[in-house]
Amino acid sequence: MGDTASTEAAGPPKEPEPPHLADEARWYTEHTALLISTTKWALLGGVAGVCVGEATRAFLWSLDASSRLVSLLTRGLPPYWLLPLALPACVWLIRTFAPSARGHGTEAVIAAVHQASGKVDWKVAPVKLLATVLTLAFGGSVGKEGPCAQIGAAITSLFADLLRLRDEDRRRLVICGIGAGFAAVFGTPVSGALFGIEVLYLGRIEYPVLFPCLVAGIVAHLVCGVRAPVPALHADMQFLQHRAIVPLSIALGALFGLIALLLIEAMRGLERALRRFERHPYLVAVAGGLALAVFYAAVGDLYAGLGTGVIESALAGTARLFVLAFFFKIVATTVTLETGGSGGIVTPLFFIGATSGAALSTAVGLPSSVFAAFGFVSVLAAAANTPIAAAVMGMELLPTELGVYAALCAGTAFLIVGHRSVYASQKLGFTKSAGLEVPLDVPVGEVLRAGVRIRKGSLTDFVHQRVRRGTGGARRP
Image 1 (spheres, rainbow, N blue to C red):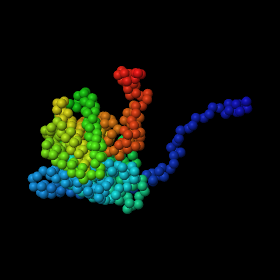
Image 2 (cartoon, rainbow, N blue to C red):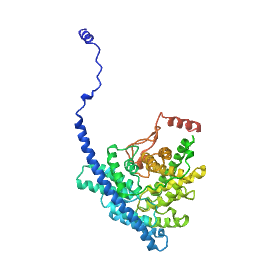
Image 3 (cartoon, rainbow, N blue to C red):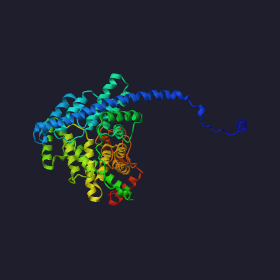
């Protein structure tokens, strides 16, 4: 009774008071640390941007010089007939001096960031540069961003060693090097830097590295001086005012997602088929080079090398391309990368996206340049799982009214491709559907092996059960 009486006398409990500005810690304690950290990473990002920008410019110069030299040496003979010699030479270079430089390069860099705190052997840079120059000069279907990503990662990793940075700082600096490589080689400072961050995870962005990566990307772009491969679009944009443009963008995004899925499955399928010949890499390279030479002779050499001219003409609306041009590029790229060629994958993604968009425009009767622009960013978003970078690239390169719908198209393609990627080392950060249970924080290449299941109680589960009942799948014998 006494306790009850004393409680009643004290009255009801007081509500907690909201915090006041006067209760905060002294502002200069926090902002001094922020100023020091911002200055540190502005300097590190700027230095990384200068180094990677200069290295990218040297790489692009070597590509141009090697193409001219090969043209002189072959004396009118198509260079791709020497691919049965060039691909084994690439295999020898990489196996002898830098095994981690194999394939399209970005894959190894992603693995280094996740597994070794960004530690990259400095020998990767010159070996990757030489192997990619050799592949492209003779007509291999690869891109130029993979070497730039590896070169950027190798330079910044060496820089971190010289400064004796902590593992976490090394990792951040190497990510800056990756983003700077993308930004410099494509002439897209913001979306290139974002790509370097976003490509590490499917569905997750590391915000602590956003500022220095933007600094590195912008500086690298200024130092390298490359212009973006998108010409001015002269198509009539009146159809963008039509009400059907939103569902049309979504439908196109779904188709581009399926095209990206076709590329991913083609690469994975050929990789599995060639595993039985792992002990004979040089024989595989010779066979791949011979297959490519015969393929180019049959369908034309538009699909050899970078294909930048085809991309630009498709975006300008002046290209007259075979309707299956995107499929031929998928075949050429898959064979090149899986049989020993060295190079990137993003430039082929641009080719596949632009040509597939141009092909789809013929079925609808709308401007091919607009559809090519949609495909340009959407196949990148889907195949690499980088929807934000692709959407920003659409805004960065295309007219504002077109970039908005290109971003919507890219977001749809990203969802449709599923939990797959051209980068098997990319880690899964979230599930693309609430109706699925997928293992998180595992490489994308291991997701299907670990198991993708329908989430119980979800709308997907409800539809699945109804379909099973309708087809008799749930009936007991």
